[in-house]
Amino acid sequence: MTIVSPETPTASPDAPTGTGSPATRVLGGLALAAVALAALYGLVWSPADVEMQDSVRLMYVHVPAAVFTYVGCVITTVASIMWLRKRTAGWDVLAGAGAELALVLVILTLATGSLWGRPTWGTYWTWDARLTSTALLAVLLTGYLALRRLDLDPDARSPRVAILGLLLVPNAILVSRSVEWWRSLHQRATVTTLDPQIDGDLLVALMCGFLAMALVFVWLLVHRFRVGWLEHQAGRLDLDQALADRRAEGRAAVAGTAPDTGTGPGTGTGPGEDTGPGEDTGPGEDTGPAASPPASSGTGAAPAPAAPAATEVTA
Figure 1: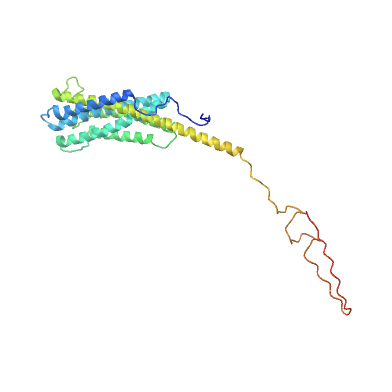
Figure 2 (figure 1 turned 180 degrees about the vertical axis):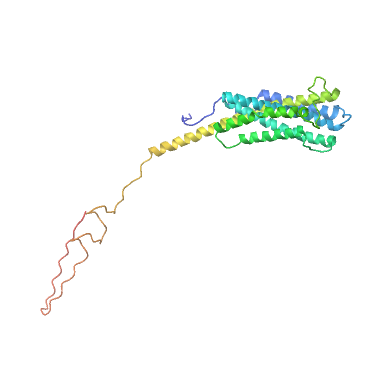
């Protein structure tokens, strides 16, 4: 039988010990199938565009990545609002998971957009309104995640992180509307309008890209949330263990024996104590053998032996 001290922190038996589950395995299989379908449609079955030629195939990744960047920002902002209202760890973990996915996708958006811009615009990068605002969104997401990683008290860090998370949706709206509010080289929306400017196999390939991106996004979000929750639980257990160890040290210090204050044998602290052999401690004490009296001259008699000296016994 194992005896567990009440001071020892233990995890709940119902707490998850991994990130996988039957549902996520099914979701992962569907995501892989959708990615394979999107790859076949985008690279093999769909024809090249009349104007952009084969560079149009980048759009099957670029556009879904940009849209789900906005989704990640919305998740982070909504979770930040809920944390400010509820102050529960789950919302904080969800906000972090959404921001991490949004950062990955915004980098993918910038990379594919630059590759598409080289044959279309003649340059990989220009300080266009859409490109600049997207880069600012990537910087904001990076700063948000860096703030989450600071080694601060969670009670002091979480409010600052939540307030910064509120800025993501306004910045995402700025990115989305930049092509309408300012003059831009970037084309306007071609899919979200009532009359999409893309059709046929190109539209089917793009929809396959959206389906694959959606399934992968949900699968990653679930797993990242579970990883974040396990990290949170591990941090709580470490803190509880540290507090338990400190309490145990305190009880041991209180129950410990006080140090011995005696001076030990052979140390004199008052009159009559042993001060060691041969030391002069006062009149009448033994100071060594007595001197012999001078010999008597002219009598020839042997001198009388000296009387033994009196020895004072001290305690």
